[in-house]
Amino acid sequence: INRGTGEQQQEEFLSLLETIVLIIFLSVIIIMTVFGNLLVMVALCKDRHLRKKKTNYFIVSLAFADLLVALLVMPFAAIELTTGEWRYGEIFCLVRTSLDVLLTTASILHLCCIALDRYYAICCQPLVYRHKMTPLRVAGMLSGCWLIPTFISFLPIMQSWNAIGIEDIDGRSCPSVYDDNKLLHVMIEDRRSSGGSNDTSCVFLVNRPYALICSTVAFYVPLALMVLAYQRIYVTAMTHVRQIETLQRAGSAPVFGTTPVVTEHAPIANSRMRIETKAAKTLAVIMGCFCLCWAPFFITNVVDPFIHYSVPWQLWTAWLWLGYINSGLNPFLYAFLNRAFRRAFLVILCCGDERYARQGSCSYGHTQRAYSAGSVNGTSMALR
Image (cartoon, rainbow, N blue to C red; front, side, top):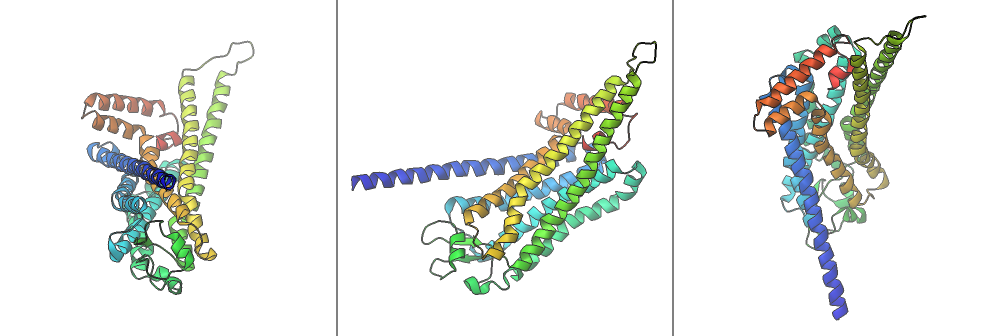
């Protein structure tokens, strides 16, 4: 008996320890996501130089979507995960799920718009970019980022269109709150959290048409556009690097009977080449993080209805939180890597010390002059 009691106490201690570690981990994710995205929004409000660039409006709208994910979606998901039950009723389960789909889709669509904006800025002539990305078109793209997700979130979910054809599995619409005294399909029972006997869960199941349409709109179409845009940007960046290398070799090649001459533009060319190469690597990091965070979830989302909802809930939870983490990475990928944003962040974090603003302005102005000989809308100018 004592041995059994000791083992039970040890299991309870380990369970408590796992819960504490999980709470700390999820809290860090939420806090970092809120802090990073809030800092981006405050920076644009306080720095007039940031408001002059059209791309930054996409970045700030992205930050707002990710901030809402951290404030309205992540906390309830964390509470349900750590307590093993859903305590807020069926109606709020529907609202929470709709907000989840709406805000995460809006975040992904913003990433797609940023890719398209950079494609026009880098791969097109300056006049073409100004013609394509007018203030009216930017406003239209931003509106689309928020309106399109409503057609795959609140509208179908509140009307239970996503559950058509699967009610016979559990007898109720999805997402919904299920009590343990209901006889559920074994796969849905396994999907639920492993809480106590009186626990309830906010389970989200979708039929095949909804899974295909939602995943296509929210992930696969934006992914295809991003891949095409960044592939063209990468090719352009590498072309710039080869052009600079060619100019360097031509400028330093010795004429017969003379010594090689190093022109005064050589340091600028070397700096420009390093920046172009770094910009190309940044694109690879952006695409890699996006695919790593969201591809597992959306692949599972499409496959699950075709295998009778047999994906374990633990795997669903892991993929979902991996997607949430993307909302915390976006400020670092799209804003913290931008020199103008970094300057604004220093001013904010250093309580408005204008020395950082002056230093940033001087550095930015020097960069502008140094690269004036290159393309007006070159890769380095658009990505930094």
